[in-house]
Image (cartoon, rainbow, N blue to C red; front, side, top):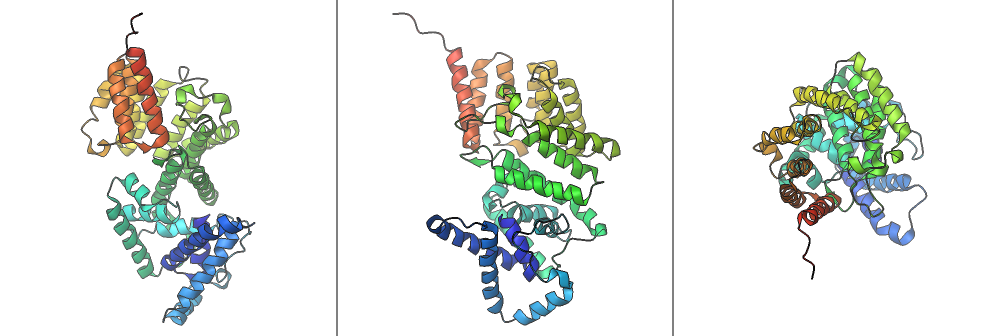
Length: 410
């Protein structure tokens, strides 16, 4: 909701940085008033009105108000001089959040800065969450985002959907941002809940709008397919108390069959068009998981082949880790553990819980319960997600109990 309010105010006033300040103050007012007075019937409209009033105060307080308004009037056509009604249905071309996304991913910004700024403004992630995603200190990320906002302010970029010729330069960053927002929504890196459904839903909404805007872009179609196929498993990923349920143990009848069908259709149409990109390959992997009746009946050789293709495309250590697990499912745990050993010294995985978690899983497959317990405990100590921490700790405790000899009878 906040990104949509920010988009409306940025469109109306043409001042991204000040609009962000106004939105933050509107959210603060909501946090103060709504618990006492109740949530309004139209929360988005309420936030727009409060933010609008705050923007008026800020603009009027600036000495250069008239010059800025004249500049905006000359820069934008008449149909962009007003904010849309709070309850107006937005199309892809009129979606202020999508325009905001394109603005933040302007090629004038370094790719890392564009992604960070967009995650903050559009994704609603905190600076700390973005810093963890980039594996940098929070102070470093705060400076990066601040410089990016100053660069946009100084550039005088108009708040509008870029022309078709301009979009190509921004698409890579736009897709990366949408993928990162979705990933944080699907599996939160911190906090008590496994999922942040609002982030996942917003990422899917924006990716669908991007696909509508660019129906012939195969990678945007692949990204939408990947999100749908991944989020389709969401209802089965947690138990009654919010506990994490592994893919192998999920009740597949609870998966969203409609989302799976749409995702499969999207990636099936996208792959022949080419060129093949990483999101299409990941969507193809997700489709194989979703269409399999069980973990044992999954087409692991095909998944391994796709991970090998994906690794050539992106060279990510996380992809290499997933490829190692697929290797274990095809050739046995010893082969998978050997592939994981090659990643042990990769600094990008230092301190990350995924490497010891994968190692623990493969040691358990190999029957080495003692080493699996050690690795599960190491993985639990490294994650800041409470559900993941509990899951890993419980796996370690269960294996430790199974490995312990029975107590002698009295």
